[in-house]
Every structure is written in C-alpha cells, then in structure tokens.
Image (tube, rainbow, N blue to C red; front, side, top):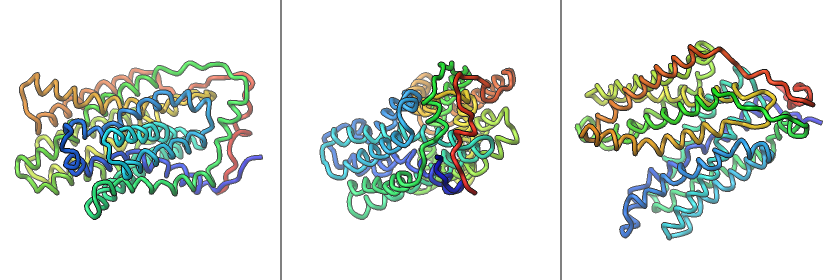
Length: 411
C-alpha cells in the first residue's frame, strides 16, 4: 500500500536535501586562520582542507548511477548525510592536519552521494514543469542559501571562539537527516522497476554531451571566482570587504535565478542552456570592462544568474533525456563533470596566463568571457542541429504500469 504524503511537504523534504550541496565552503571562509595554525606546512597543502572534498566527491558521483540501481534512495541519502556530518564535524576534535584532510575527504564522499540524489529523487516523484521548478529551486536557490549559511556561520563561530569551532556548523544538517528519515518515502516507481526483469537500456548520447559541456562551463567560471577580488583590491576599486562581497553578489544572482529557472526553460525549451552560458559570459564581460565597483557588482549578479540557470539546466536535460523505464540514473555524471571542471580550471588558466605572459586579475576574466561565449556558440549549434527529443520512449519487458507505481500524494 502506498504511503500518503502531502504534495507540498514532499517538495519541501526533497529540496532541503540540496541545502548542504556546497557546504564545503566553510573551510574557505576560515582558510587564513587554518594556514596560520599550521605554519610548518606549505600553504598549498593546508588549502587541501578546502579543495580535497571537491576532488573526492567526483568518485561516488561517477558511480552514482550504479549505486542508485543497487541501493534504496533512502539508504543512499542517510549514508551520504552521515558521511557528510562525520567528515564535517571531526576536524573540531582533532589537531592533526593530515587527519583533518582525510575527514574532509569523507565529507566529499557524502556530498558526492547527496548532490546527485537531490536531483534524482525529484525526477522520481515529479515530471514536466513541476520537476523543472524543483530542480532549479533546489540546485540553485536552496544550495546557495546553504552555502551562505555555512560560510557565514562558520566564519562567525571561528571569529568568536577559534577556527576549529567553524566546523560545528556541520551539525546543522542533523535536522535534515531527522525529517527525511521520519517522513520521506522511498520512491515507489524505482522500487517496482527494480523488482521486475528489465533489459539494459543504452543511455542517449546527449547525456554525455551536456556533461562534457558542464566540465568546460565549471572550468571557465573559475576565472571569475579567483580573480574578481584581486581586480577590486589591486585597482583600489573597493575595500577588502567589498572585494569579498563580489562573490556573494554572484551567489545571490544564482539564488534568484533558481526561482525562475522553470519559467525560463518553458519559454526557451531548446536553447535555455546556451542562453545561460551566454548570460554568464555577459556577466564576465561586464566585470572585465568595468572600472567601478557598482558595474562589477552588476556584472557579478548577471553572471551568477547565468550559472543559476545553467547548472539546473544541465541537470534537467540529463533527467529528461534518461529513458523513462531505466533503473539507472545519470545525474551523477553532471556532479562529476562539475568537480572535474573545478579541478581543471586552475591548471588551464595557469597555462593560458603563462602562454600569453600575463598576470592574474583582469586577464583571466577576459579568458572566461571569450571561453564562455565560444562555449555558448558551440552549445547553441549543437541543440539547433540535433533532433528535438524528450525522454526516450523505450519499452522494457515486464514493466508495471507507471500509474500503479506512483507515490500517493495529497494536495
């Protein structure tokens, strides 16, 4: 018998899973204090406290499709959240830098499970515009709210009591664990699919295409994230606090875009991803050509809005391209692509800067601008020449009726 749950409450339970998607930023907000606490270590090694989770999260994300076909979604969710909290909190109790980095890797494993699951479970329960809105709201709006909370909360605790106290913010998701454990049902559609004899379905090529595009999209945004504060500070366009605010403004643009992603996708159903890439490039261009703090903030919010449409856009495209009767999820490829792009960015920008004998600051913003516009053109051509497709209509033997497998919802 299906479990009856209020539809709006189910939406709430699902989107809050994305709250800790980018929570690894706590370490970034207190990195100066951590470096000062370990003077015997090279700062590059200490910075692994911030960067190691992003590297490790690629591993479970790459295998998420396999994991989701073997284990129940609730099992994966609770495993991911527990790994996240243990890996996040333990640095508060230990002083060994190698152990802290190891536990940060454990946090990365948790994020690598919960991030793709937060999108996958939306597709299990919802379709169409409802699914699109929830993907945008979860991956952009809720994730950004979580990022702001963890960064500010961690920074405040570190300033008040010491840098190790910043890691106590990772206790906060315990309420997410409690609520989802008590009330979130296992997606019945996936349950029944697993109980039948199904034939293996070959994933559409578009899934790998958009995932590859996400690698370059994430890598190109790196030029902004690491250089915008340098431009503001080195050119005396604002104070150090205002320089740090630029990324907050970018994040705020991403947050706002999450609210309207579903509507944007409905208005331009074919080209919403390349438009998002162009919008991000426009924001980078405004920042590159601007010589006032106000215009840099305008460019930042526009660039953030582009990312707030582009990231959920890639997730939504992969979700709708996945065969309806497939027991394998491919959204983990997007999370892995995002992580690979984040790792590739520093090396690619470093090589380009050396190639043209330039310095950090404005030049990387120019590289981001040109690269994003080029990526947008390629992506636009790709979606225009490709045959318009939605979820493949693939039949699988011995499949129960979808309506019978749908969860019982109440308004």
